[in-house]
Amino acid sequence: MKHRLRKQEYIFVASMLFGLVFGAGNLIFPAAMGQQAGAAMLPALIGFCITGVGLPLLGIAAISITASENLFDLCGKIDRRFAYTFTCALYLCIGPLFAIPRTATVSFQVGAAPFVSPDVQTLGLFVFTLIFFALVLYFSLRPSGILIWVGKVLNPLFLLFLGILIVTAVISPMGAVWEAEPVGTYAEHAFFTGLLEGYNTMDVLAALAFGNILVSAIKRLGLSAPKDLSYSTIVSGTFSTALMALIYLALTYVGAQSRAVYGLDANGGDVLAHIAAHYFGAFGGILLGITITCACLKTAIGLVTACSTTFAELFPRSLPYPKYAVLFSLFSFAISNVGLSKIIAYSLPVLYFLYPIAIVLIALCLLEGLVGYHRPLYICTMVGTTCAAAFDFLRALPAGMHEALPGVELLVAWGDALPLAHIGMGWVVPSCVGLLVGAAALLLRRFQTTHTHGSL
Image (cartoon, rainbow, N blue to C red; front, top):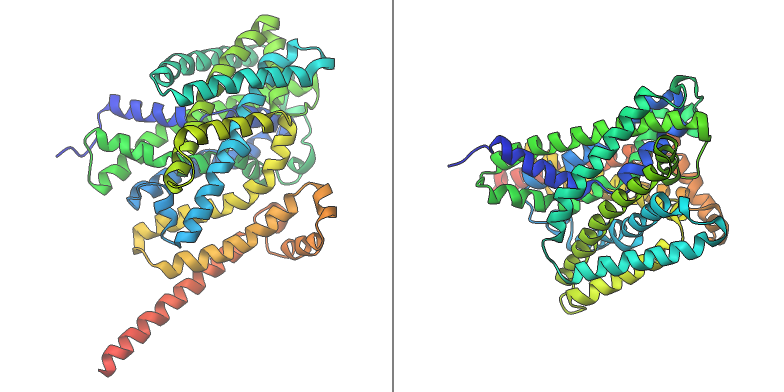
């Protein structure tokens, strides 16, 4: 029986994982973070890598350790209704609500916006996204070898160009990184701000959504024992996430440099566009734009396909796969025309709600590998986490929505009273309390069972 993968197989699996989770957010947020963090980029980067690199790796390990078939199966350990709710929310978040529209807006922001007159930016975005999603829908309805071809050609091309850009920036820096004062919350809480900024990559959510694909690929390579699957998954994931961490370091560093020339940009798409134009002029902007657009196109096709397949399987009596693909493509097209900055702003409350739940779910799965499955631990811990995460959701809502919704300010004040809430970690203590309550309930049940049997 085969117990380990060969070196070439590890590389193949690592490349697959990189292609699944590395998208638009992995490019724009480290660059924007570097620009804002300035001299505090290192603690911010460490925090960013914990949520943007470490947790996705643990998420994939959790799926392999618990031998779950998919995200719905994983969430079913808590409750079937929770499984439906969280699975739908997660796929909508990494799908038509935020991640898919973001692939189109980042592509436009980096590849087309610098060459479009400011007066017709709105029209330019409409035309660009119309063509973008027409291609996404075409390939989503006609699965073929295009994704493999694009992955094999465009990922190396993108990494090559990014490598050239980074080496050029290191040799000929735009400015001194360590002289740039941190702005905003980076000035006082650089580490925790970077930690929360890592939410924006959505990689933990993507790891939970696509981890089963990785595990299935390893199974097809000849492994079957749970321990062997977990080991190979973690090794492959380590290779992939190490590459991502290296890219994050480079993008953060180059983003911090760009502030000396361009000041603070509105978003990470503008940061990348300015960096490419600074070093390579119009040609660099065009090449970067084409490469990122093709890479984002691949990601969008994969996300539309995954979301449509998941919803068709969860609700077999609703719509068939092709109609879901059309629906999600049209919806993503509409959302993408809101603009990149607004998509980022409106996605934050949802991410602040979903991420703590995803993190705790991963922790519970890893705990299950040590102590076995105990439903009270899952239920009590998740109740505490969900309640606290709801406060984070309300706190992150845009100011206009605070005024429109009665009672929100009072609820936000309650949430702010939680320990660690000032650094965005208000869910940690309620989660631990929930875990302790679950453990106490489990011990009480065992005591009652033992006492009953002893009386007999």
